[in-house]
Length: 341
Image (cartoon, rainbow, N blue to C red):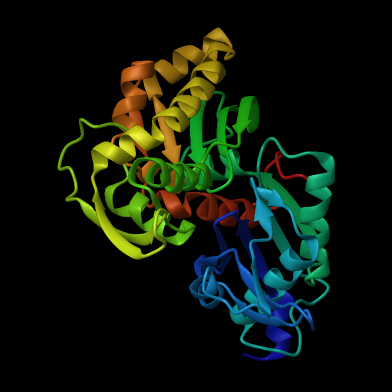
């Protein structure tokens, strides 16, 4: 790719706690874990994305593995900048230059973000080379990615359960009428599984193993259709320190996640309670839309339906709904009033 072609690049970035997605020309060109590995002495970047993830929990002493984002916001500014630079280099296929002065970038952010955290996202993106940066709230991006017409005078409620935060927003006329952001999301679910297996089985496992448990037998409730087979988990026995294996069922994981799922339910109910009556009437007809990786948890839609008595819709490819919506917002850079300048 020639350097001159970079002058027309417009990029949408879903900078997530668990994964970062970059969209260019309507294609997802980067979809990798939000993680980097750095040499402790020299601070030189050793690996990024999938390669760094494989090193988590296995790296030697001289290499530290860092997740720059926590609870949906940047926790390590320098690491986030390094990560963005490397992802954008992967996208461009060039080591010489990342961005021209005319590059436009839209980055999605949690709705509950503070001004300081917002500034950190903007600064990291600019330091990575961007010149024109706009921000969009995650639930708004999710709504667009789901296919909702957010500019219409019609109420819709979107629940986006990501890695660091769960975002619940009532959207109408291109704005967020009511929003709730809680830090109970995918990472918390993973930690619940780590804690449960430690307490119930006397075995220590890492976050990567807990993530595999969540994917294979994760459930929000016991009574689900087509329950998965028990999943074998390997870890370290807390009594004698010897490696061992156990099998866990979706019943156990539903028990482990029950408290966190209840917090998500409460946040959804709180958002519904604060919704204006006219928009409540719209939501009664349209139901609740789920996006984000957390929406893939078995039985979550059924559990929310039982709690709210509303129809529950899971987005098509919910892991990428926010990225798709951010890309649509990028195309309508000057049309959408909710892009933060």
